Image (tube, rainbow, N blue to C red; front, side, top):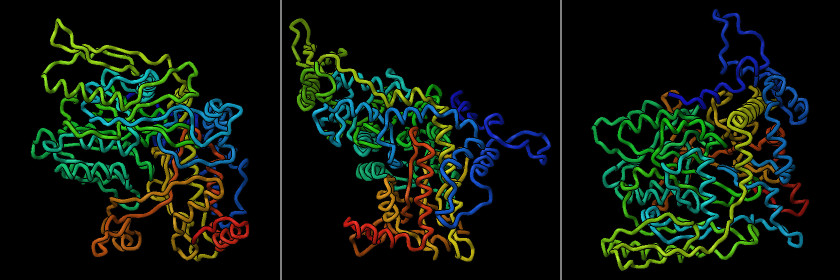
Length: 597
């Protein structure tokens, strides 16, 4: 069952009125149009059809190809609002291609500049807020830990609204990063009774790996979905077998599920979450790889995950620091275990430049101490603590009521209004789901097509310069791409080298390690060639973690066509067999750090 948002998004921009294509194929007796097929045709038409490029100097111009894309997919022109926002609010992206950010931006670059006084030199740190660590366990925080600053309260409400969830349904915990969020949940989840942990990731995710290790220490049995080579589709038969409850056990465990891979761009049906729920699993939705406004496609009125994790950073392309949010469904709070204090839970502290009228915010350590004391008092005396709602930055002191055995909180408000404008979230709301998804879908598929047109000259069989892992040109693919570059002899260029050379050209790329790959019998010979080791065990050189190192990129709502053209142009330079050596001598001559080959 799909929500209206899903149906609307899937239709956006890909029907007959939005694609500049010929009439339906005469071989189709119904005369109907398959939007997926027609979308692929449009993307192929956006670059000279049936043309391969063997020299980086032979690439068509940016202007020519941009015009061709808008002609093949006219509705791309309807996304110009994103270009306007980028030029007005993110001037630092003018000469920088930023393809290595995952998560959601909070503020714009122009806001950052506005916080810097005229007599001060701009620093690399955004001034919006700092974080302060709380030494407190998750249960105590959820029950008694709502003593937060008004700034944090406003930030909480803004994020809840942006994520399309309801405050009456979920508690929100701010954590230092994604690793902290996963570990905090792993330490509190009742693996003693729900003993299984099932994850669905086609790449190594350090945060998820931390959860797996923590869960194993607590007695959990960890399992992972596998992904079929070479398209990296989830192996549905094997995953279904792990999800379905044949033993009729009421509580199976925790099902950790991203709707798409932030590495390959593969997308997975959210019906897997329904199947897991029906078979006794708690569901954790990892929304970190979702694009801006993608949460609206879930139709959370139809399905509400038990847990939700999502990351936020300060300024796109300027400052990746920020925090992670762990949402916990209030109806299952009683199922969580008492855990030891964790340093991953944080408070958000507004900085001086945010509001000149703001007074000092109480430290999170003093708040945590008071919370812990309150918890201990509650447990020792078996008294019920009155949990009246309080402002976020209030300090709570317990005062015994002589007329009652209950404890009443005495409130001291130490801050004034500290509301802040999250302009990047406002930009996402302004652009909307349809515009953002249409734009990123066109751009990522155009880039896939462009990379596949690059072939080595004089290689006999026209050897491809680039190998793409995961879906190729596809209507329903995510805005992420994993690839490797190969030289004219068919040998892979080290992904780290590709990343370094890209950085020297003001192009920021990611590296990733694809894993959990399943090879059918037809690909066993290829398996021996492509798999490599993530690391070597210290014990007798035992090899572990087989997979593939790749270069990866992630697109966002601010990505534009020039970004795609520049990464294409950069990769095309590897068609020159001497490109790497030329770059080595170039930077040596300029007295810069040599790029290691």
